[in-house]
Image 1 (cartoon, rainbow, N blue to C red):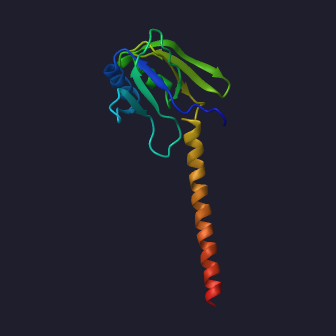
Image 2: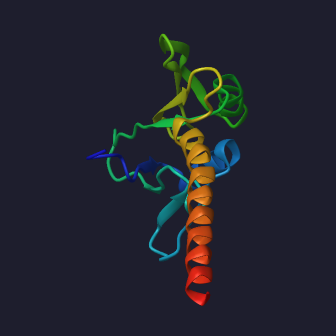
Image 3: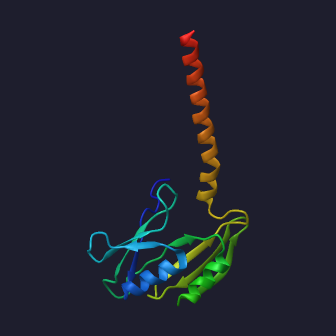
Length: 157
């Protein structure tokens, strides 16, 4: 899809506190590879769907951030948020028929963040699609190898 979100930035008054918060609730890996006080936020393993982003010191009052994070269980995620020091800004609400639920919270830096849980049986649309495609790709590769082996055997005869 054109113009998909490919990066996010989280402004923070206390960068260390924000790093701790996001690592605790989502397990994100946060580092400063260039030693420039701009922290890379890795939200996924290599090859998995999703986006990564950045975390930095807030540059001006009211500097905004907002994005939605896909979660398997919104209730558990909201509990993690409050356990880590965040507050619920909007409780779990159904989006619409077969669309899942959303909620919003404020993190320890007063940023507003959204959560999204897909409809029942769907943990995250992209992960489910990726799992379905993998066996098809393997089958196609296997079929291509068989075809090449048969062709090679015919040539030897």
